[in-house]
Amino acid sequence: MPVDYHPLMPRRNPEDIDLGAIKTDLEVLIERVTRFRKEQALKPLYTMVGSAAIVIAWIELFWQHCL
Image 1 (cartoon, rainbow, N blue to C red):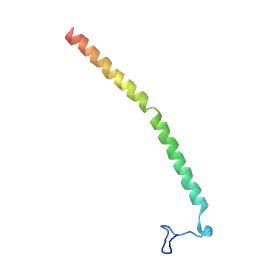
Image 2 (image 1 turned 30 degrees about the vertical axis):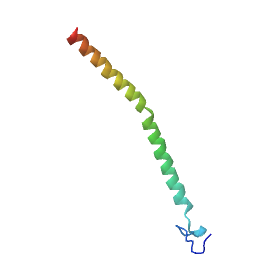
Image 3 (image 1 turned 90 degrees about the vertical axis):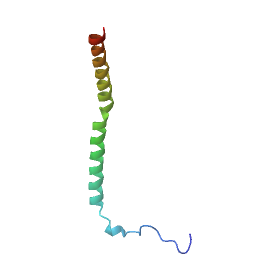
Image 4 (image 1 turned 45 degrees about the vertical axis):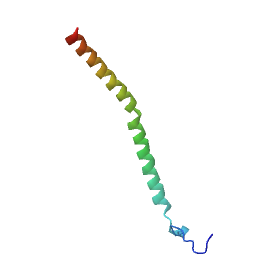
């Protein structure tokens, strides 16, 4: 390593690290990721149902007005 090397973040004293706060932050992040996954799970189904509804509506309009 070069003599003038300075790390981006200085090392922290292990006694100063609050493990309880880190655990709480991780629990909140895990909860948010879980909720996000549940919300995203049905998006493809909504897309398929919406697309099918548009196609069916178009066919019905075509059938009634053009034939």
